[in-house]
Length: 391
Image (cartoon, rainbow, N blue to C red; front, side, top):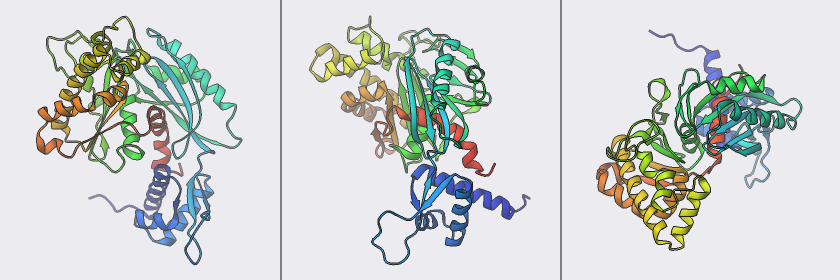
């Protein structure tokens, strides 16, 4: 029989719960924290005072109040003084940001990533971005860690990128290579882009308040971040969510993973461009060109978008039957395709998904846009602090 938690354990748990709430929801009054967290006023006061003394939050009177009597102090995360580095390796670009507590992006850098770039050639620019951003860090600011989002399958235990066919990597210790290149950031937490994007769209974005969510991230390939019962579904080893390799057309195109007819071969960048007669092009701008042409009435582009939308609807319908989500979010280039093919996608998924599973589902685009990957990468670094703010 497990012993009851000690007062110290309860206090640390409450400190983490309060800091996490302010980190996600932003400036919150003591009165609201009392209500939301179910703790009494004196406990909330003691916790916020302790977090303020640790330099994690500030407390100030509200700027305006219409209530009589003494106003409740407003607790804010110390975004400018407590920060993490967030990095992303995508198919066509490398991005880096300094993200403050509360999910606020304080500084950012970006460069193109030529396709075929090897690991060392990718981590060197990212390391350079970190060194540049350090020059503007305020004196006395607290660094809590770094997170990296990658368009590939990432092993949870050590951040090894097992397979990233869209960027051409197999069994690459990318996090370790990046940490070595930067020199003194400590271990870097690594995860799949779709996973971390799902995490933050669930906590503070388009799916806030919904505990069952599917986030689909598309470029050349397609990845999925799945939230079920309020928790990320990563599976054994961390490889869950590889929805792009769900086989939907056994006689279809050969996939970069070695299989044939994977979902991403029917809805990814190459499929759309080929259907539109633009197979000689590549990249996000080429995809946006097809979407724009379809909106302007180009017949070939419209047919391509309609065909891809049909395959998207088929796959989403299957995922809805399996996971019974409340929302499906389309990120990456899938966002742009969804905006012009929403009716086709909804029609097809209605044919595939069971009424009881689909009737409540909302189809959405990311509220955090392309920042979801960076803010999500930062969440990996903030997690240790939020679990125990006094470590």
